[in-house]
Length: 276
View 1 (tube, rainbow, N blue to C red):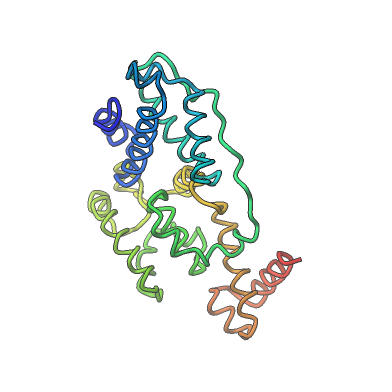
View 2: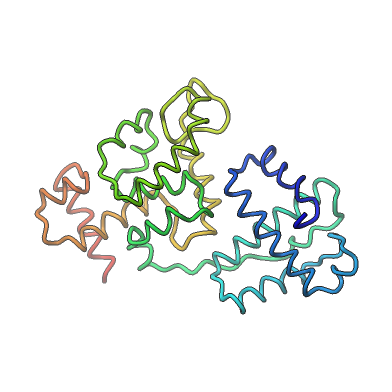
């Protein structure tokens, strides 16, 4: 056992929180590292081996140590705090510990980098292999990088459009993983659509925009860009325009999948304003 109540905690994440297996693995890795640190560096816990002996100061000390020794970003700090908080909430609500030491610990403010947000498509390969992000978040990034709007992506039957997209090798690798992840849900919901609700809904199995936003909001702490579909799309279009000024209006409209010259000029003006 890597940490107290490990097996029971994993069952809680799987059966009550309905988390994906890769998310559970990542979460339990962080809890394991935390308890390894306590066993090596915290005499109070080492002597008692009781979760109730762990204080908020112990958790702050651990996170601060990581900040110094590993130079972790605020997004990583917040992710690890969220994982530790999830564990202690599990203990508290199941009467396995009388204290909730994470209650007074605040996350760190995410540093907003407008340049990174604008050029986020340059890091798509990195995002697609990031197991800290849900499959739905990664698929959203992939499709928006090909200039599909969120309204199009969530439409019934959108999966048929995938055959029309020219994906790169690393994008195909992710798609294969995505298909393996979602096939059981597709069979259960009796549909080939790719954004689906977890609960059974034969009539309307497609994930709604508010439903997708729950995944994006949860993943926001693990990524260095703002996970707003509207802004992701706008930034992807603007960044492409800025870096392909040699293309004609017709070519830009075609590659960006825009309706007409009016739409192109709208995003062209937006793209120039981002560099001022």
